Image (tube, rainbow, N blue to C red; front, top):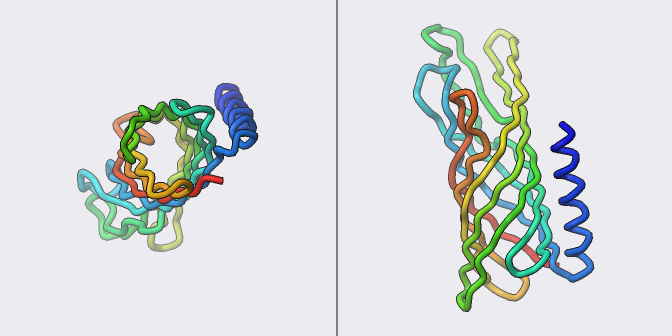
Length: 180
């Protein structure tokens, strides 16, 4: 927990420096995330997640970012070998990340990203029961920012938010961001 607080403090300080240089950005995107299924008996399923980002570029190669997300499209099915139905979703996830970019002369800027993510998953069971679990893990991914204009970017990335205890949350995402 202390590491998470320290990471969030570093992100906040980095964003303060960025804002002073006019390189802060906000982003909204959709992630098509694949998850391991330990509830329904199938190997994997996908959820659609809305992801909001607030970040700041320190320089051309380095940025810090905070993210938060929640499931828009939950997965509903029968629980492992029973007639009971359940509905699964990521109630929320959030984290702090460091982004290392490779600027070049084209409009496409590749990057690597790494950080820390916490979240809460939830299962609503027919008959009124509810199962929830909080989780945390180191996260990493790669992507490309496409500079559409001076202030507007489109982003595509593949992110591993969770890969712990044989449970994963990973997948592609598409975002649009505005630099101010």
